[in-house]
Image (tube, rainbow, N blue to C red):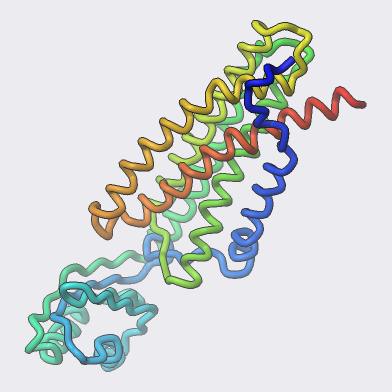
Length: 308
């Protein structure tokens, strides 16, 4: 039996799963209705960044007018005002010669504002399609590899318990984290025009690995305790004992990673900000799901088996 002094974390196992489901609903809605706002890494096109001094001019309108004069379709103009005004333009593919003409016209319009072009990048539609294909293949192979590994790692779980249930529960927790991150970025893309690029896929694969790693730590402790603890203890009691044992370690590990990621988000620059934000969301979700999604799921599954 559980000690009276030990936290009974799994007492509310049903509510943990309900809470997880509720958190996923908005994200799933936005994914199905709006999808993700994809960068030129996936769609192809040109992205240009400029810098000018802050002024009262309608910078966005001036930029759009110049691009329109060169018959160049603008997909998005983002203006960020800080110490200086930074303008990011996303457009259909632009030739180098056209870029030079646009730059000359903008320099004339903003000649008193220290105008300069910071970057110009073009990705062809074929490269964008290849990036999308490779992204899906990476996620598919990673998921298959993780499932096979878990099935192998837990093959010696004491009978009558099944490694299959551990594996499926871990995969569900992994999918929970992936959907959580994708859903949040779908919401951010819809309301704040935040785009996902190739680094987002890298972040997603890293999050999947972290999620499964954290879940395996808990599950491995359950497997060990099933052998060591008295057989009079139920599976739920053993699982709760194991979660309590690993809780401080999981929280400490995740907290130190989050401190590092938060520092990178604040100081790392614009180019990696989406990657770092995705990682932050994924680490928080992964820490939660390993304790409050994967473990309750396998406990409920075993309880259902026992009651049938």
